[in-house]
Image (cartoon, rainbow, N blue to C red; front, top):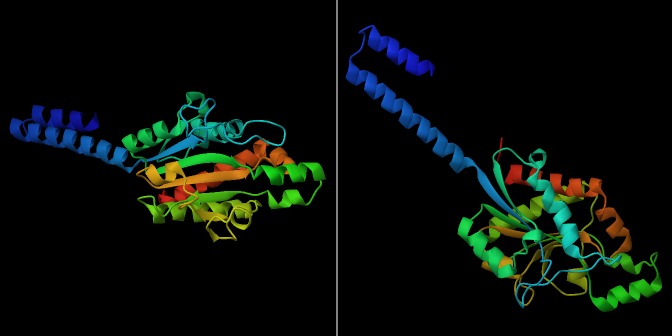
Amino acid sequence: MGLLRLIYSLYKGNRVNFRLVLLIFVCFIAFSEICKADNTKMKRTVLIVSGHVRKPVSSIDHMGAQSYAGIFEYEFNDAIVRYFENKSHQVTGIRYDVVQTSRNIGLRERVEYANRITPDLYLEIHHDAAQTEDIEMAIQAGENSPLWEDMSGFSVHYSENNPFPERSKTFAQLFAEEMLKNGFKPNLYHADVEKMMCIDRLKGIYNRIDPWGLYVLYNIKSPAVVIECGTIVNPHEEKLLSLEDTRLKIVHAINRVLVKLFDIK
C-alpha cells in the first residue's frame, strides 16, 4: 500500500506521466506474483503415511503385526503419524500431507495418490515383528528371556529399484544416525534370520530388492523410505514405544533429517 500511495502522490504532483505510473504499477504486481510463485515452489512436500490398513482393501493389504499385548500395528503407526498434523510438530518450509489408517487407503491407492501429487519425499511409518516360530519360542521362555534381544530395535528401508535410490538412501542414513544419537538400537533380525540385504549393520539400513521387495518402494515415483520405529512383538520394546516421550523422539528425529535433507535454514 505504501508503494501505491507513492505512485499516486507522484502522479498528482505531475512529476511523472500516466504511462510511467502505469508501468510502475504493473511491475509491482508482476513482482508480487513472482514472489508468491517462488515461495510455493520452495515449499517441500512430504507425504507421511501410516503403514497398513484397518480393513484390507485388496489381496495385497493387511492390518500389520500384533504387539505382544495384542494391539494391531496400525495403532502404533497412527500414534506417530498424527503428530505431523499438529503445526507444533511441523518444520517451516515443509508441507506435510498426512495419511492415517482411518482413511483406510490400500497399497495400490496410496501409490496412485503419491504418484499423482509427486511429493519430494514419501515416508511410511511401521512397527516391526518377527517370524511366528521365534515369537512363540520367546513367549514360552518368558518375558525375561534373552531371545527377545534378537527381536528388537529400529530399521530403515529403501530400494535401489526406486527411481531415486540415492536420495532415499540419504534420508535412511541420516535418520538412522539421529535414532542412534537418541539411544535406539538397530534391528539386525532381518539380516541374520531372514537374510535380507542389510547395507549397514551399524545403522540398521536395508536395501529392499527381490525377493524382499516392498510394493511402495518399487512403485512410487518419488524418493521413498519405510521406517520400522521399533519391534512391538518384544514386550519390553512395546512398552517403550507406547510412551509419548519415545514417540516424540522419533518425530523430532524425522524433522531434523528433513531440515538437513532439504537444506532448510
